[in-house]
Length: 475
Image (cartoon, rainbow, N blue to C red; front, side):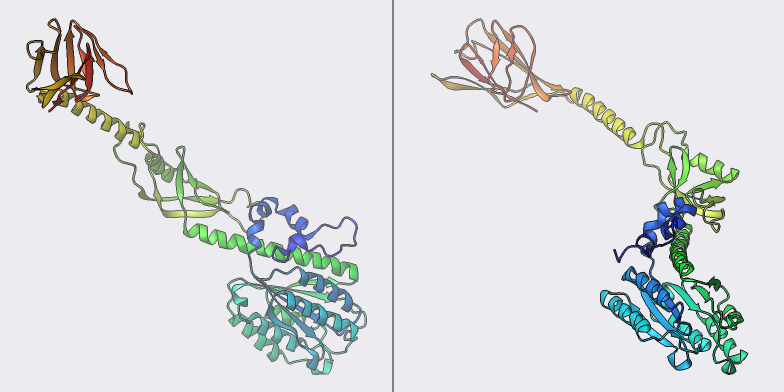
């Protein structure tokens, strides 16, 4: 897929038995790094600048074929430039700096094929100075300084015609210009010197290029098979560079936002995609941290608040430092961090619940005792065939018998007392004599047995011997 990392999809029709893919070349050396950060490296935007020397026809078709396959798999957030190197008039941007899309890829393929079909390779002339100026121009193209620039030069680096070799001052101007440029990510520049037995010595302006681009790498190519192998190395170089760039950004972000958390009494680095994933504190810092993390309180009413402190030690990229040589241990000196202390033995939220329940219970107990409950309102006696008899019911207790309510049996009476119950709140105590009261309710079956105290709700309704009784309220 065109939007995926180049290394996972460029295999370049390897002809050599047992040759490893670019992905395998990198993963073989950096297994942990690739597994952890390989997908993040896909998002790294790049600018690829290829220089094709047309002065020697022997490598022309092979270089064109390899670049064509390379461009087909470029993600669409990348840029590409192809510079044609030949006589002064023929040294030009063969494909000007452009963003990758389907139409551009088709145009690049068409132009590359035209180089071969039109017999351009074998044209005498190689204006290395103009080529260098074009590279400098492309490195300053819009968006390039914020992306990863890759420059690949395929040439014998032989300036021709010899009588027109530029003065040293001309090369120094290019050196000064490149030194003045600023990049977010340093360009990766490599020159592949093509074997040319007709010209000796090769690379007569190689030293000037090395001075202009101090970090430029030099390689030799003496045949088509080696060229294919070198393109595999190009992909591996790109993958490594993208991974390293990804690591650099992650490390920079991590070091500016160091976040330590308490994990079962141990201080650990918090975050995702951590390169430096382990911290080793010095003894003094470890002692201070332990006092904060390991609380000796039995309980607390409030959640622990973050505390500011300074710690020192080292950050360690334990999984990756043996793979990527640049990941040395980073000293951590007087680093200000926010650390959340450990909770008390009884968690603060549980402490609050316990105390709340305890206070409510105490209040409820006191409430049931003071002030005493009193009856309020009326009590009603009625039957389907008799009018309702309503009697005043006030005070702490009341007793009703046949003397008060004629419809009651002469041997039946009921005593009603006002009370407060811990769970039931304001309620009644019913004590019937010579009869049982039955609660009138669809939800609950309950009997107030004669001679026994029974807790009843206020305004509840009961029956005895066909007489219904509606109880009073309590204040």
